[in-house]
Length: 176
Image (cartoon, rainbow, N blue to C red; front, side, top):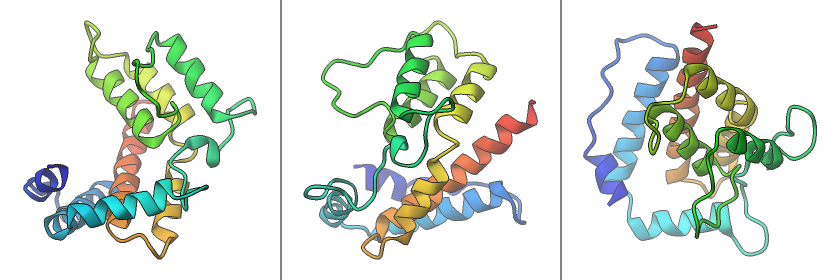
């Protein structure tokens, strides 16, 4: 269903040119096209080979594999401290570590939308979480995915993710 939803999505309407917004639009178009022809079983197998594997995965999706906390030590500890300060708790049954790319993206979604809260979190709170817990490592992770020869579909996902994060980075920088 996710592949079908992406394949059916509208392209981003961005004026011609270059820069983060144009890169995002290009990466989104490439992801839409790849999703339209991707076999779900092949995408699943590629995910398993790249990110799960037997023993150690080819590519880690955990921030602690790429960056240390601002004061040293594992990034995972810093992310957990951030979540505690924000009064965001791990849902029961979740086995993913909090510094996993999907988990920090989900945290940003909660911070932006205020899901489960009366309002969205303050912009400064969103920016702080992004700068401390995502920005130091997400591009390195995306580049690691793109560098793997067995990556096919997930190269497009990584390129889109990297482009999206560049737009986020620029958006947070504008208000400083």
